[in-house]
Image 1: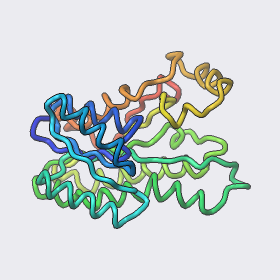
Image 2 (image 1 turned 45 degrees about the horizontal axis):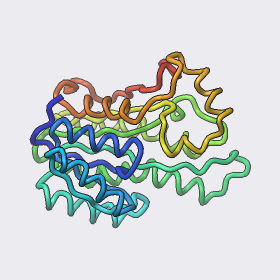
Image 3 (image 1 turned 90 degrees about the vertical axis):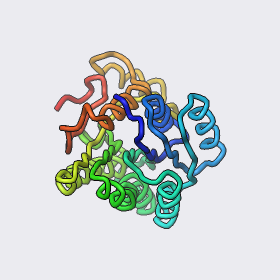
Image 4 (image 1 turned 60 degrees about the vertical axis):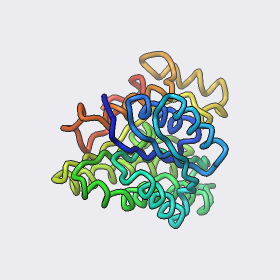
Length: 247
């Protein structure tokens, strides 16, 4: 999975799955533009990446803000000349039963998890079309496939991301650009660390492999989809869930 000469942009790169994706893409030779809201964490990540000999730069971006998306991606393209690989990873949760869910929490999750991916894709697609090569990889979720009580907003946003992935795959396939999604299951991140031990034990019992996943498991799938080895795969949802959902 050699990615030398490629430039990747990873959103939500300051922690968890995004952090792991940025490091993994760099290990495979890519130059990595890392984007998130927190400058100190991004600077630390850039230091980690450059210590391995790869190139990297940080771009502060709140993906719920369209102007920040436009500005950050414009700056990344100006610095590196292009974007070959886009990893839409940034995401949030605002859990609540639907009957009690506030409209603001619905909007925040849809804007961050789904609308931001649409906006990021719009900003990088010209670069990919120009060179007739590109990889768009959207991080969705098993709960966008099977639903989850108390997460109507999150599940809807992640299901929408799957539909967006398939639509985009059809739009740009003729230009040698692929668009795929990775659907993690129960992954050990800050987002899942707040769950109760009882819930965690119950979740593990539903996973055929009998364990939770690591961010690196998702990052490996992302690197594969970003590579030439995956050149004949598009519009696909790659499940990384330990068998929690098979379909």
